[in-house]
Amino acid sequence: MGVAVESTQFHVLAVDDSFIDRKLIERLLKTSSYHVTVVDSGNKALEFLGLDGDHDDDDDEPDSEIAPSNHHQEVDVNLIITDYSMPGMSGYDLLRKIKESKSLKDIPVVIMSSENVPSRINRCLEEGAEEFFLKPVQLSDVRKLRPHLIKEKSTRN
Image 1 (spheres, rainbow, N blue to C red):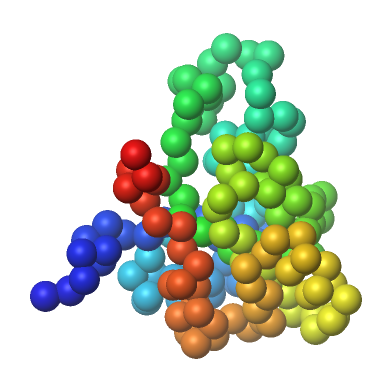
Image 2 (image 1 turned 180 degrees about the vertical axis):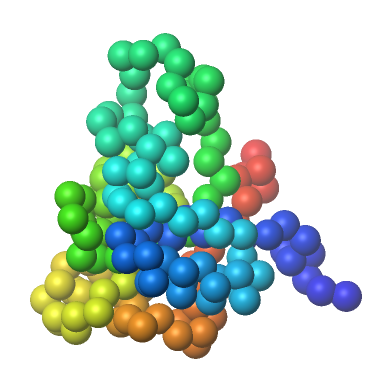
């Protein structure tokens, strides 16, 4: 007899350019019974979220591969966890793009990094990150995600 929330699986988008780190975070999240999507770059994360790395207004192409109608695409992601240091778009850049987007700004973002740099951690938290985990991420870290998960959008009618 679990809590009603348990019936819908929370969906976490994990972003990391390292194959080993992706596998680790995916396993930890699945162990905690999350539904997980893993991508290897900030651009792929934005693509998955329907932002396509440009603006979240109009696409030049009427049909994008991700969603036939990009106008009211509801992405059921409850939380994003991203590596800080990635080639191309860093986790910090990804965080800023998400927080600047009208449609995505409410999705909680957690940053992970193998380097303990206080100024970097503070900058991410000031920019809106919920947590900053040091790698290797532990199961105890993953347990800290629960309070941050965005609740189902359908409950806000």
